[in-house]
Length: 212
Image (cartoon, rainbow, N blue to C red; front, top):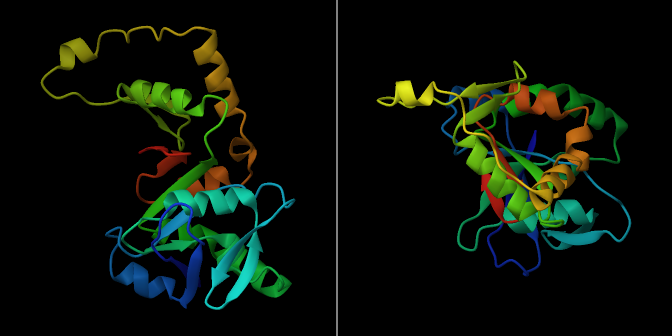
């Protein structure tokens, strides 16, 4: 496979990357310590008004949603290594696309971390993410069983096993949550595969907000 090295920089700097060859079996043999690479789960978004990124001395066009993801992923001081389908797969080669799609299960399984990019901040999404984070301190969603599971609270079992406090929200909270959950990412057919095969907890990102 190819991996993408995202060079460090400030938020508004040009996006610069390079591609590196890697072998999944070698990465897996070294163990998943989270330092190998991170896999990005996202939607391409509209192809209108594409953004430009640099690969070495050449440029390629990517969707605005992917460019936004790269800017939010980029660190000011350290480079990062990622697998991102739109860049790591030669989209002009049908045969390569076919082969790489067959490897996606293994890519997400071997990745040290899976990042779920919901998109930039808009429509009060920061507030929605904060609400979900607060709720997530009490329970977690298990995508394999499609169930909410209480988070263990050692030493406070009796209190924790009592009914959960009701979540209080008004129109603002309801609208923010509805807008977030109607984003295109939740409609993707690949979402469950990417979430299911990631062997470590993923990180959900929306704008500058992130949560595990």
